[in-house]
Image 1 (tube, helix red, strand yellow):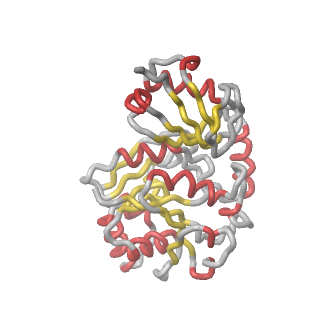
Image 2 (cartoon, one colour):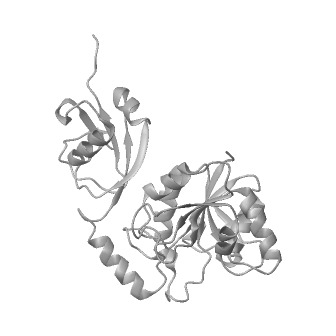
Length: 279
């Protein structure tokens, strides 16, 4: 497989919303930052796609940028500019206005790469067509898009429709809903508030010894609605068949030993420490 880079499209004018969509706050931070944080762990490098006039914008200037060099309207400008900057990599492309996006949606997309299709995309929940702005574009797909744009057709979705694209069923309901208007913003704010257990927070988990072997990784990033680490561990224990009860483990949060009832916060780093064997 070619290397996989990440690209967040943040060059839109947000005319229908009436305010900058990248700066909207759904998770206690600007949406562009939330998108960057969910995408960065699953790609080798991550960039924000901007128009030339946005490079010094206070929000966008804090991220690695790829500036549009292709003079066309819409997301094709960002896609092709990224391809010209790094022609030998694949791109996991996201719109910046997906506040319901979850890590599982990205993991499933990446796991579907097979070397046979030029792109991997989800089927839209609304019309069944490919979703081009949460998709993996292999170099061949972007070469095809460049030829299509040169012929006057700038729609990325049409390229995916007319190419060997691997289409997946949606991983999570509503995860790919674009939020473009104030009415949609109010609706998604209600949906996020009504998620079981309250708002989602993102955590980094670290495993050692047998836990690491069973989980298949030393470090993992995930979103959860659990307020404390105890029920989170029980969910992981069931998922990975961990043999230890919580009472047999120690847990550290942000470098300090902590009780299982300690309240979790967005960005916490959690380490599960299994019993030590031997003398």
